[in-house]
Length: 110
Image: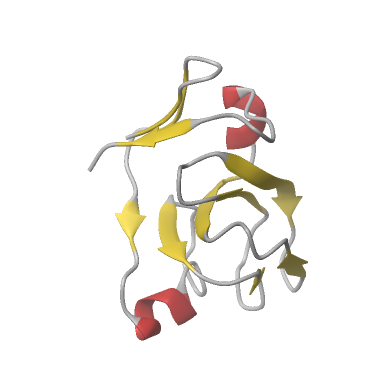
């Protein structure tokens, strides 16, 4: 479960942690529906091969939100400051529903 502690909301009830290079490279590519995935990367992602818009939350190592992107459509690139390293890819609308904003503190429970 991913919670926004600042807003006292739930961002996602379940997620998949992507650990190896292959799973991180694939992400949501060729999936027919959005599911929440989490992985570490440097400062950018792309949605080439993703069939639907997604929401993106970037956090630092302390799970403080450093960047957000709502409705990132297919075939786009999203870059952020290198201070963020954890990427949370969500279904479109998840950021708005959870009222998540930059500087909010998250909690991730495995």
